[in-house]
Image (tube, rainbow, N blue to C red):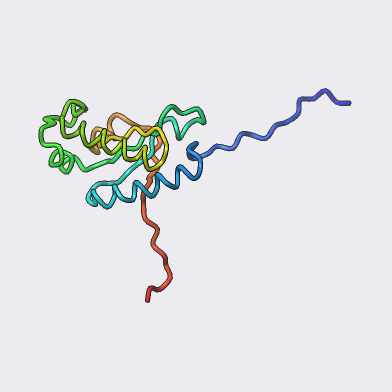
Length: 140
């Protein structure tokens, strides 16, 4: 009998550790956010739920063009990360995070963020979420 170690298959890398059907509910909910902010780049799943099964929360970011972010939150005064003190940003962020939690049952951390800041400070993986599928079949 051989004493060679048993060769194990490498663990499959998942694109996301949020399970079904919660991820499907999150997709549907983010479609509504995409409809509400049609000029934004959209919603992205980021953070630990993309890296490991023991994630603490599910990070969803609505990435916006800098000028659209400044127009939406005119009292932020800076695109360098100081918006966490802006009343409108706080109310909208907390309200949407709560709504997403209700829709999905997931511990959601939702935030609006401007493009330049995100690209400068966060180089991690982003997974687009909430995009609509359009059938190639002829309609009508």
